[in-house]
Length: 452
Image (cartoon, rainbow, N blue to C red; front, side, top):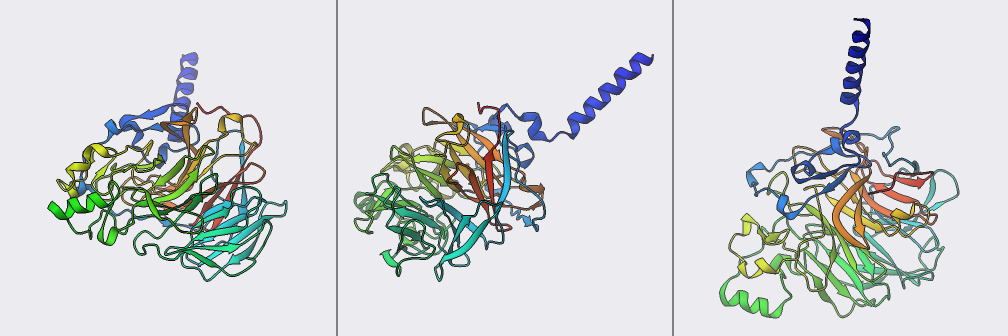
């Protein structure tokens, strides 16, 4: 009897330990597929991997739409949770809603404090936190930041305001511009989604500018049909929009002087963050529409092909027709490019970067990281983390890993909302979050479990 009692006690302890362990610890090392991939923050944690396939999507249920806003509490001693072998330290605090962050060739970190209308510069002095100075102010919701020409010796820093693209004369190490701003692109559509990202092709010949939609689901865009629609189709790129959505939900392309404008790709509701691979491939981190259901449509990270149409507003994830636009564009059904990596709906995928450092293990070299700002249009909270896109020989497999989590406190409360990611000059990964105005540094400190 005594032996049985011991065994019984051990069994109860094991059950209690299992119950106490976070859900993500129970799923680490597994690939969550099908309905299991449509979870919430409880299953988020380093080692959790998801694969959402187009065939996994439920039917649209607009009646499911909910408003589930989050409460952001004051940051105290919380830190992001990262994989074994990595360490987290505070890089900067006291920032005003830091959004996109980019690393200059000399290692300075430029931060878009969008609502404050300024670009700030952070320079580490070797301590735990970086020193801040204001590089440029008086801007109108600045977001995207790029250095031109690409390489070690830029002559300009380009800033994408919400309604224009500006550039300042700049040399590596400058704490302030060398001259006044020059307007490169004087007019971008304004209103609606305000973020404008900007990146250059590796040869410096092409400047890409992302412009999100003016609405959620083209509610204010007039209907066109018959000869009027056919004439529009004949004169515009595949999937182009019109009216108050003209030149929106697109990636635009220019030369570095802002000339020779063209629509590079269409139907991308809100390509918030962009990155360009060394081979010249453009990538977008994209917010999809709200109001179609808890798990529709997925946000996504994808390679962007010239001339491709990604669905908005008439379709999503291939030829799935949006019920709000039923029957409007049957000509487009078989012409929609399906995104590469589908992310839990309403995660709000924002800034992205390509890991080009040497500090992380070899398995992370060339990895794509994307910040997930977090949901509001879903009863079970998703997002609030940084993910790593899984690739094989540079091609996305459709899977993604949780890399930095721990920003959620409970179902209604978070302390951080990730926005930007960039690679520090020493190979650490920096993450901005605009809930409490902090930037975090993730460094590799020892042996780590290899990503699958």
